[in-house]
Length: 453
Image: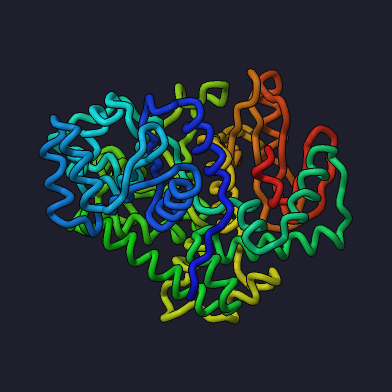
């Protein structure tokens, strides 16, 4: 299977770093494994520089690693590295790439001295960058410009499958609050569900383009999931992180207000396993949404970091993980999901993809739950719980979001939220499967418009 190089938005950010930094910082691209970091960096290095040296620390031999014991003599260091890789470096027009830099911490520590020398540019890629063993005994360089790479977002996915004009139509409809028509929306939702099933991992998208076979796509995603689980076992040999990870679909399907770690690990609480949760977050294979105790601008100031929901960073992987009880995800399941006919509640899948899209668009994830007494007679009372699935901060106001997995446009949570926090609210959004419309002051948007919020 030939590997395609997909157009990625991060390339523009890399160009901005190159032009604005002018070698004053190294570029560190962090992200989960298999999101395409190495591919985009190699393409960038070969297109934007006269020459490049790419050191992949997953395969670097002792001769390469030994170079970093001579970092105090940079003239010797550069002579040796050019000799080892048979590449000539040119002042201010060459780049040295440290791929998978987390596997050799001394290389990352050397960045401080290499950047100060200013002869060449430096790009690092890595995952699990803050895990103890990957930073033990080194000084983390401050001379890094750090950017995050995510799986392909929906617009990048449409670029990859040669449907660029679709997103232009989506953007026009959103910007002008102009309905597309139910027939057009049905077609666009089918395309969007295809993205939900395949996801944004480049290998999975490539498998789709090469084979158009959901079984082949699923096999690729299973391999990626096994890779993640193996990484978690290395970090935590007890297997607790692996169990937390594989239980994400189950926990979301319970439709509870938070991830209950005690239901996965006996006697566990978020406080007791906080270090494991931090390692999971650092892996960037998952997205955390934290409860905002006081929904106002500056969510992080009022967040409860022990009260959270957890999502997979890629919804294609999420779908495969949700059906891991089979040897492979039957094509029938994929076909029914694609046509929106699977007889199961898809709400948690939509919630996961909305979380993914909001995160890749640069938003931190927060949500809000509250209870209200709706009936009282003498000492009898009925309490109803409400949940705002996501909260966004815009200007000096907040925008609550409610997610529906169907065209059902009831929005009781948004209504109750408005009664409590009308002065804080800028816009209210309902994300669902039907066409764009306004219901009084609530903007009802098809889910594929999420990244434009």
